[in-house]
Amino acid sequence: MMSFISAADLSAAAFAGAGLMLGLAYFAALWRTVTLLVGGSPWFAPVALTVVRIGGAVLLLGVAVRFGAPDLMAALAGITAARLLAVRVVRRAG
Image 1 (spheres, rainbow, N blue to C red):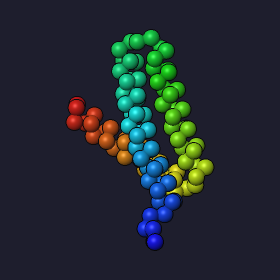
Image 2 (cartoon, rainbow, N blue to C red):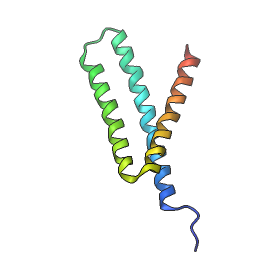
Image 3 (spheres, rainbow, N blue to C red):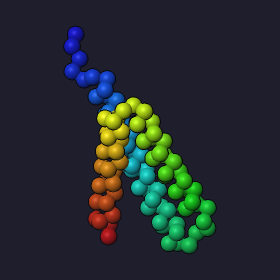
């Protein structure tokens, strides 16, 4: 039986999906951080959100780089797609 999808393709697709999900969470947390800072909230919540945001990105990209360049590029493509969606949402809202 022939398989049309290789393990490398599945791995890259998984990293693209993970990048998209991380990116959506990243930009939602960024939005919340800005809202908190503009609203004059205490410093702890914005700093915590920033640490979690950056830590999640470093973790995902660190794991992806261990799997190789195609998986790293797929994760970055997912994050970029999330950025495009976030920019579209903000432009429509404002």
